[in-house]
Picture (tube, rainbow, N blue to C red):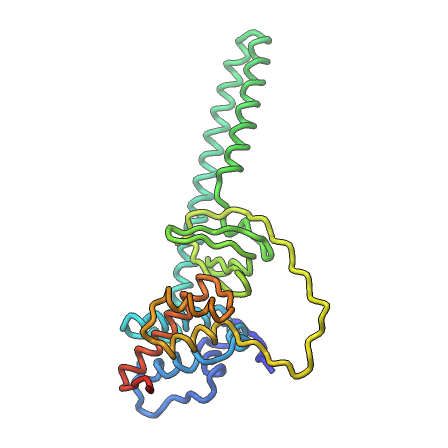
Length: 288
């Protein structure tokens, strides 16, 4: 039975991670980095159901730790990722307050300009006033339509269940909005959770939601084998053939009949090789 999902307000990130890997216990006198390395290896092996039950803070810690291990850097402590996100949220709130102040000043300037224009218009002929007003209204309507078409959406404009396309400098992601918590956009793409930091996004636009797939009327046969999770298939290929590039691993995954999104493949490939590199550093050799 899967554990009940809890946020960081009711359970610490360390508590969540260690509950997901109950066999990992801190050894007396053990170096902090050695302990964190063992934790990363254990979390890499949990199934998809247990992974989805982890809070976003716990998943963020693992992603940061696995990336640090892959780069040969020190792994972050359990509290470091949460502290970093809190700083980003505070900066985001400060930016919002500054934007509100600027909007108020602009509104005051616009009101003053409008009052001056009205006084000048009173001295002109009525016919000219009517023509100018009509032209101004038409121009404003056109400008508003152009702004609506060209303006990128903000995280606060999005709601859970919206279907959007989010772009970064290097990639494009289209999927359903899962959440916009802590200045991070989380999308569900082909059943996979993809997290995008607001600072990395260059454009967000609404996309057409695909029609739901019709459910098969054929009932599952009793005792039929359960299909392997996508991540399990990718990890098995990476471990069996550690020398393969990401492109060749992708080719083998497709040959196995598994449809994995580029973001899922990239994440699994990096995590698997992070574990392989850690094992090699400890003297592990691939069995022939």
